[in-house]
Image (tube, rainbow, N blue to C red; front, side, top):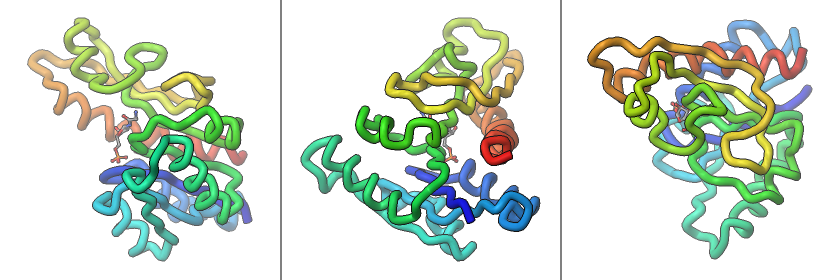
Length: 191
Ligand code: GAR
């Protein structure tokens, strides 16, 4: 059985979409793949309860307890590697990861970003897209490299900007698309 470890910081709706798709499509039997653990850097991440209710192992590693990014990442690697993951999935994990972390998982580390990369890496993507007058926004699933929000693109979804749209409205419509493209990208990784 190949293990997936998912990292979250908040609501975990992308994580939940992957877990639900894995259940519905019976990835364990058909792909030999399971979501083995959900890790969060925040104890109040809403997604933890969802994972626990599904019988998935969860763990919280609070970055505030560490003196440096490298020290936190080294401990995070130790926690993740306990599950011997074939794939590590960043799903709203709001931490910049050190080069050492990225190198360790190179080729088996995915991220979802709420923009049509390479446009708008970083934060506040929908605000910036609206300010730039974009007619389309979207989301991207990509392999992670040591550059922020960079790396080979695996899946994208585009969402039209409507008259009077706010960043919040766009974020909500983009999120529903994220829930389709992230499970698809993970499935394709193993096919
Ligand atoms: C998602 O919109 C994801 O694309 C974004 O955070 C949200 C997490 O939602 N990720 C980033 O901004 C990473 N730079 P979720 O916790 O409900 O999956």
